[in-house]
Amino acid sequence: MSVRELPTRRDLFKLGGLAAAALSLGACASTKPSTGGQGAAATALRVSLASDATTLDPHKQGDLPSMNVLINVFDTLTVRDTSDQLVGGLAERWESKDDKTWRFHLRENVTFHNGEPCDAAAVAYSIERLIDPATQSPIVELRLVTGAKVIDPHTVDLVTKEPDPILPAKLSLFGGVIVPPKYIKEKGDEFFAEHPVGTGPFTFEQWQRDSQITLKANPKYWNGRPSVEQLTFKVMPDPSSSLAALQSGELDVVTGLTPDAAQQLGDAPGFKVVTSPGVRTFFVSLDTEEGPLKDKRVRQALNHALDVDTLIKSVLNGAAERTPTLIPKQAFGFDASVQPFQHDVAKAKSLLAEAGHAGGFSLKLSSSTADKDIAQAISGQLAEVGVKAEVSLLDPATFKGRLVSDNRKALGEMYFVGNSGWTMDASSNLQSFVRHDRRQSRWNNPEADKLIDTEEQSVDPDTRQEAFTALQKLMIEESPFLYLYQASILYAVSDRVQWKTNANGTLAMATAKLAGS
Image (tube, rainbow, N blue to C red; front, side, top):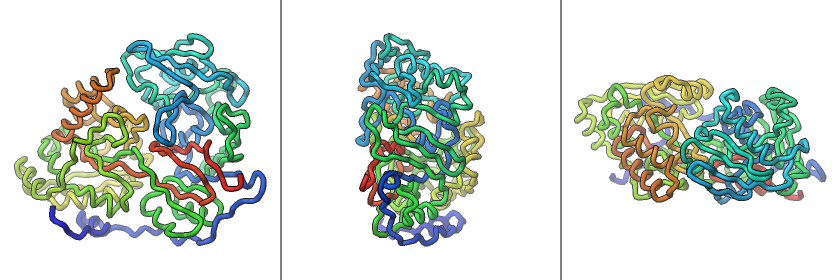
């Protein structure tokens, strides 16, 4: 590809016949943040959330906004530390007893906020509650678990119907939350969902829906009392308002920043924008079962049509990294030898002509309104090879509802989506989208199904890596998706805050410190 001047975002949008609407984030105040007074005020940490939690029952949610709050109230059996290593949480250690049994050895003398013991019985109750169909949990990571068996007060076995080589990693977030049996049985599910009790570093204080959630430091936390006395999550969907609140001293951390919003802070003294590597990958799902997209030459052509590096630089302000397929580079299974598609307009047009579409064709590209900029830019690039992808924008709730519905065609021929592989294993990135019988799969390939079975069921790392490598090569050849990037995590903080997220991007604030606290 010859060296050329990179198009602006407006140029990209115009290529698709869609003018870019200027973002009106407003000017932020330049006031330096308050350093806080003495006592409780100096140790109150205020964090913005782009959207409110859906429920405070950890087994009945499967979204990061809810989990970002709940990870501070509840503990999980295993944990990803800030170096992205899997370490002990409520379980100090674990081992595989056989192909279908994982044994977990629990910490002693851990109690829930209400004084109830957190022991093997509580772990078994939690696992059984989560996998019980009556719970109607959206959490899919423990789908292979058939039950939990108490060995002694501090030892519990998790039994699976098939081998699950990454079960410990699946217990580091959604699937591994431990809840209090006695409290739930006495109070009921509905009360628990409004007044959660866990073992975590913070205790629940108050939930004002669509406004804020207030937590308080747990003085008896097994891993040491947090430095922050009070933790408040403020629901602030508008990034300009959040950044203004940060600069006026009403917030300490602004999360969920878009690249555009992050630029608004500029060089204001007393604040900084942190860019951290993330594992959330973004791609376009293609309906490979009918229409032009049934032909793999067309799918390959669309991949060649995309200039992903330009999308990252011009639309995302560089806050992302190219991925050859759906797997982030930090995940086990990633193979650096698998190369991404080269941007080649001539090759794309040639493949389209070979497939009988020399004059191009039209179809729809569905996207959440939250991702409208990148969807419109993708549409613009596809237009360069004669493919008219009309962008259909849906509000986030509608988009998600269609995504998880049983109708795999609910979002049309193409849709733009992101997926977090928070287990740091490629299996998580692929589990819902590749095997033909999975919830979001729109690709029926027996070879791919066989490779998915191998990597999901084998306990041998080398065998799993071989399957992942073969699968990534097959995904390049068959192109059931348009492969894009893994997004960086962006958040803004006051200089008085000492805190670091991990690649999962979760808001675990137990280690946060404030100057003067």
